[in-house]
Image (cartoon, one colour):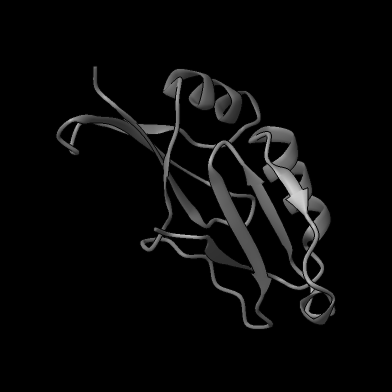
Length: 117
């Protein structure tokens, strides 16, 4: 069982991450342990997902590597992302699943999947 996925972020980007992961995706920020909080970044949980965003001084977005987020009501997730100005790129290339790709404010790739009925 997977506990969480860590994505990188640039230094000082916590406010924009909160706007996206809380405001757009509806995840709740969870406190980082004190020993890790001094490193920056933020952690989020909700909808059965836990994502950690960790600061990298020489940040480059993950364009290929990505978390695959299993969700309910894929169209609602697509609507929220699209209305917030994020890309929503559907494809039919994953048998048994509906899916689309998007990205976070720093260009990290995100995949959203829902099993076909």
